[in-house]
Length: 410
Image: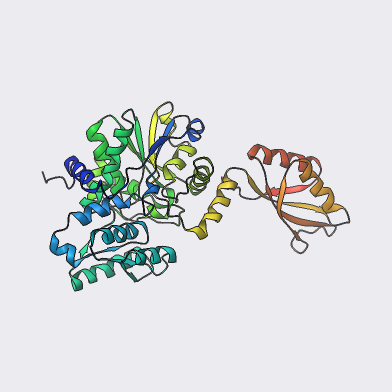
């Protein structure tokens, strides 16, 4: 039998190694979310690390394990975000030169932050695969050490320190729900947690649009999975890491998937209830809880990891809007109203009577149908919940307005 690529001793050593440079983040029961999901939900707030994600644990561990010659030569990584930020930040602290290869579409703020931490940023290619290929050529040219953001053993061991902290903070945990992208986080957490408490349940959660770990479990090995755009872009890794899969697969009890609307809703719930701004990947565990995918955890104490908070600010507003729609607090519908004087007034009077706030209303006289005496209007309104939407639908139908509901993010 080959030696395991990561052991519990590696994780414990990593915890001691990085203790002075990485935060021990809070893990607190959510008094707001727990009643909603039907179990005690503990939130491990990794988004509060200095660069906004759990990636710092593995990055610092990997950098500190380099020999003196390699520390002087430097390291390189391909990353569109959190891993690059973590390496740049801790490389600056530890005096290790860092080069990061990022896609040309990488958010400007992340590019500039990496440069601000002293890293050399190379923009290359359209996706992370192009970045990795180019980084490999630079490894050979410059003598740099390549640090894989989710499959390097030192990265996995660093991520596993979260499992040690969680069970120290909450020894009575019944389950840990872990977002899954490349697999390094869940591999490390599962190894740490199961080593301390063998009967604890480890549940992975990944986007339905990027279910690479599910594909790997089905095949018995890492395989390429179909990728679609997802709000949890930090989890969109086409092929899980070989080391991560070897460590994690035997220890993971199950993997669930979440849709885009529940991810948006989770981001909204965390912002409103927990005052926590997290990215889609960081909200994945809460999304699974809100979707009902964790109903088997009813009555138990369950932790999930808010693994990152580096949400693109240009996307945040749109995601919140999607979350409001998924929550029944934004509604868009079309209706046919009279095009004669007073028609619009009669229509909006009903909206006012029902306590609906109009955000936008647009007339369509050209494509509104064959009836020339009527006009089609498209309305976006604020509502209280889905019951309020149904109440509005019923009232308008009773008043003789033909209407059709648009997709509400369900």
